[in-house]
Structures are given as C-alpha cells and as structure tokens.
Image (cartoon, rainbow, N blue to C red; front, side):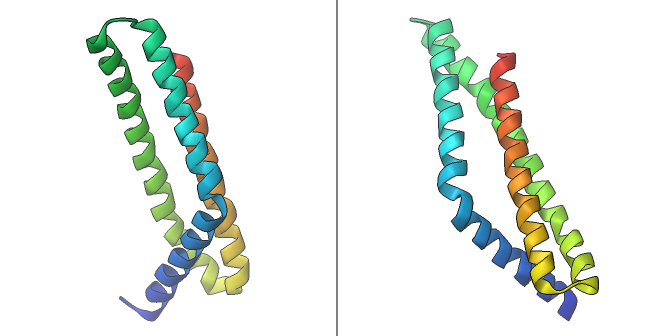
Length: 120
C-alpha cells in the first residue's frame, strides 16, 4: 500500500465516521420505520398465518440485504473518487464532496426500500 492509498483510506474512514455521526439517528430511524411498515403490511396480508407472515418478511429482508450490498459497493467505489480528488484538490474539498456522496447513497438506499415496500 502506498502513501496515497493510505491517505485515501484514512480520509474515507474519517468521512464515514463524520457522516455516521451526522446521519446515524435519522438514517437508522428511517430504516426501522420502513421495516415496521413492512411488518404491518405482512401482518395485515397474512392474519393468522405465521408461515406466510415470515415468508413475506423474509422477502423484504432479502431485498434489504441486496440493497445494503449495493450501498456498500458504492461507498467502496467512493475510495477511487477520493483518491482522484486528493491528487487534484485540497483535502477539505474532497471531504465535503465525499460526505455529500455518502448522504446521497444513503438516500438512494432508503428510496429502494420504499420501492420494495410499494411492490409488495
């Protein structure tokens, strides 16, 4: 690993920590809300049938896991963008750009969960 890669990884971790500190309560709260909405939908659709309820929730969880993998891939790809940015710009510019990107990735994740809810 070279110095630029170390610097990139360090900055990405700093950015992730900053974004997590800034957005965790809101982001996780919205995920919990969507999960609870799905539970209510599955419960209403499958009253009294535990097997169908579990099946309904498992489908949602599979979709959620798939979207989580996409989100993690996008965040990992962001390392390349940060490295490129650091070679051209100041750290603070790269940091703000990456923060905005991570927030957008989180919003995309929430939108995909919302679409999953609407499909079911």
